[in-house]
Amino acid sequence: MNGLVRRTQTGSVWDPFRELEEMRKRLATFWERPLELLEMPSERIEVSEWRPLADVTEDDKEYVVKLELPGMKREEVKVTIESGELTISGERKAEKEEKNKKYHRIERAYGAFSRSFVIPDDVVADKIEAHFKDGILEVHLPKGEHAQPKTIEVKG
Image 1: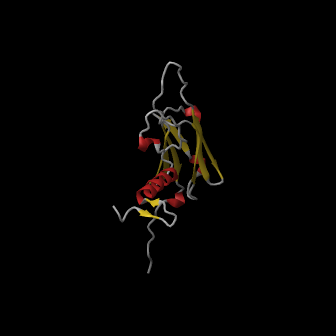
Image 2 (image 1 turned 90 degrees about the vertical axis):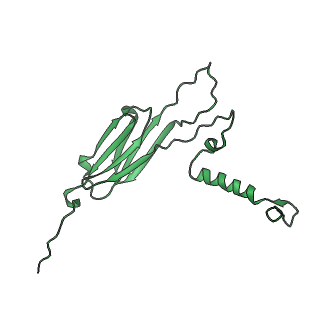
Image 3 (image 1 turned 180 degrees about the horizontal axis):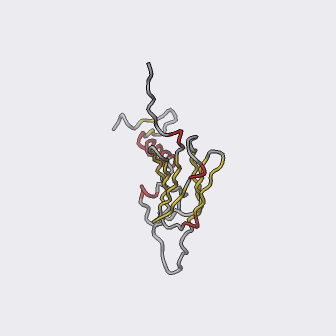
């Protein structure tokens, strides 16, 4: 252990493990993961910013954007397209706090959110559809005819 803990020029002790812990905390905030989930505090209550998870897939006919919006209703979600960008926004309201309850942990986040995705040039904007079921929003972005794969005959 003598090689891991050293004294600096000022006489203070340099501990690389303390620096690693500080780096872990910085990285956790960088990836927007609340440290409360890792440290398991006993009585500390903090609510983090909410950013719904999204999947974007593609096949021959369309792109599909799926967002997890648990606890939300269709009317609370807004889908817009402007300047080649798909924006999904809304607000998940916090449950009303009951005076007779003591909250030990609140990990579900609430509040306004907005997610934006660049729309590829081959999307037919007039045919975009959005469906909401069981807390999942699916936005279907159909590709135009020119985007369909073709085989070109090579002539001699």
